[in-house]
Image (tube, rainbow over all chains, first blue to last red; front, side, top):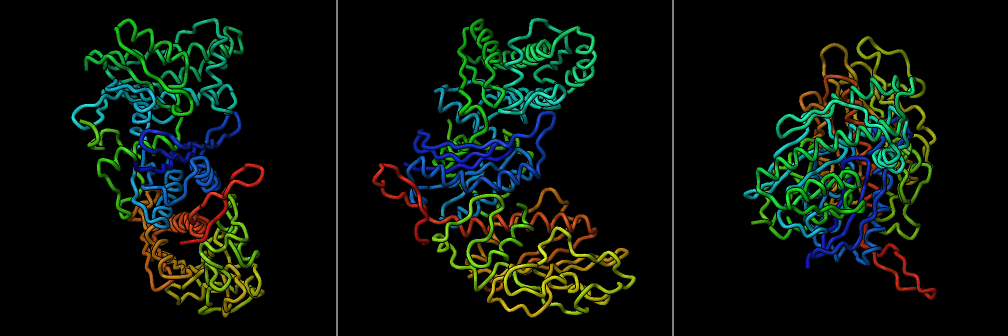
Length: 335
Length: 228
């Protein structure tokens, strides 16, 4: 019954989770929130993480009712993500691993999301739509790799939403995407925006540039409200995501779809995905904000799988990498 | 609290845990994790190798900008460190190729023979900029742990621009930077010090956490247990 402690801090959330045999024993998290109209910078984010990580570690152990002796392995996010926050957390994980004399495991952040999604929902072999502030990928498992079938060719969908929120000075608390979602519910008018799907891939930089350009003009002339813009942006980008996911499902003959990542919490996205799945006779799986949003338990869960499969990360190789592709990891824990 | 302030504050606090960079500080009873740092300090004073004490005199033509990193912990403050204000004098004159430097934390029992302040030396033209730092730990095991933790490639700085060498001799960690450019040197040293502050906090504060027995009110809590 191995117990794994996981550290996550690749973006503005820092979490420490404890997982044992498929059970999440603890999963505290903190979010670094910046003022409306601004984004989070790597140095400031890393400083935030350094300030709270030991508190979180203590909180996780307390919540799980465990001591260091009960932990069998330390997992941490090796990448992808922002450099300074990744390094801050990796330093802590390395020190803890040495102090407690436990093996260390560097985990791919995207795989953490996938493995947590599979654990929580029970999906067996889904086509995964991974959507967050830093990543947008359509992934399916094949021959010991999580293969990327489609992805953004520029910015992530969450990044598009977050940067649009800055234009409208929408609050970042609890997250800009959540606040856009709430405003979108009050939108009444669909503004036509650029729709950019390129085969299996998507592009969001064009729609962002467009909406940044027209937003002020349209709001000033009263052509639409901020709620209408939020609604229109969501409808457009989510439709793009549904299209490329459906294309991947058709390619793979998949009857399951799993949505993970922070943007996966969005109920409108889940609704649109559900409609598509129903039309195909497929099933949609999704988690709630505890596990959709970056968290330590997902790293612990992926680490648990890797630990059981015999993976280890020597200290000499326990760095971080900002560009860590999902398909770089050999998924030896699956057939 | 950034790294520099943390080191300075630790010097002002004297014994006990290093001031946390905004995070939890160790409880007084929790000093056992890595032991009392009083007699060791985390960073030694710089022994001025050359140059006058007191305000810096005019510089030679080779190093008009040979200022220590303004972000660096200057070793000021802390008990037993009244002379630590002239932190820049250790840079020496233009003949110095390099100088050893370390910031003082002001542990009372550490001999403060020389001027404190981070050492570093700038050479004009195409010559390399070299900076050295020594950090004494309580024991060689801690130093080795810190070395292993810190000895990772810094992705943010191109490796050919800044070379960094970390060595251990007993309980002392020595770091040497060689850079083409002051800015890259400063960034690399600053990043190292920030990480070092985290490592030191970890070593101090992370020991086996043993759940306290449920108290009379029926509430359980955590307290630091004895270190291994």
